[in-house]
Image (cartoon, rainbow, N blue to C red; front, side):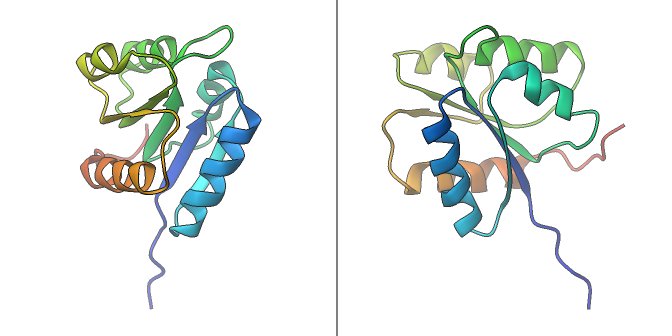
Length: 128
């Protein structure tokens, strides 16, 4: 029997409580999850593994979610991004090509549905 590979979701947020809550929620849905406390930490991880989807906070210290997205685009890395924000930046985030935007606070269903949709639409080409 061939083992089905679980989709990998990267959670990038500088708030520990948000990372822990999303990790617990997404794992309960059968997803593999890796968490990162900053944009640079996440970008470094791409040399080792590439997620199927990124749940990315917009407002982080240092490198913002939009900065991370710009770095990915500059490197021609195409991974669906679900932005999360506590501010009113949904329009800018959607215009930037995000798969979805979740406004904090959000319930359990919104991130689960957004991740499921993003993973289905993820490019199927393997990492270089």
